[in-house]
Length: 178
Image (cartoon, rainbow, N blue to C red; front, side):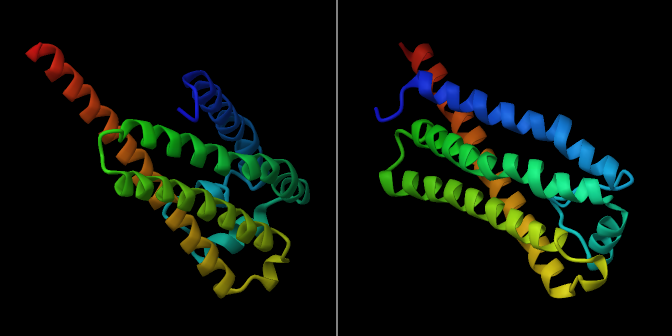
């Protein structure tokens, strides 16, 4: 085994810790600095040009600086942590599945990481613009990547949940048959 159970649970704890810091501290601070509007990262259905411009207009200079520095530092380490955690969990849970399918699940987790990091780069690009310089193209691209990230993350987590449930049912059946 290339990854011990202890190492995996440490990875889970660190990933969850970073996520909780963002969800309960940094992202609420950004929302508050934007008059209660939801930060780009937390809009799984994407956003329109008007929504993006309204957010940028409402966001205080301090909120913008915090988003670009503190939040993006957390969001630089969170996607790889999440991708690793999901990848190792899926690899383990899909133990009885042919290796090519297991590899596809790990590649899915890599796609989750890449789209999240790409989203962060596009959001940073928008945050560096004056709201009057915002273009429909950058908003459409950033929103599309946000939707892709959200969709891929949902698929990966859903696959993991299904794999855990199927494995639990198979174990239960084996105990019952024994």
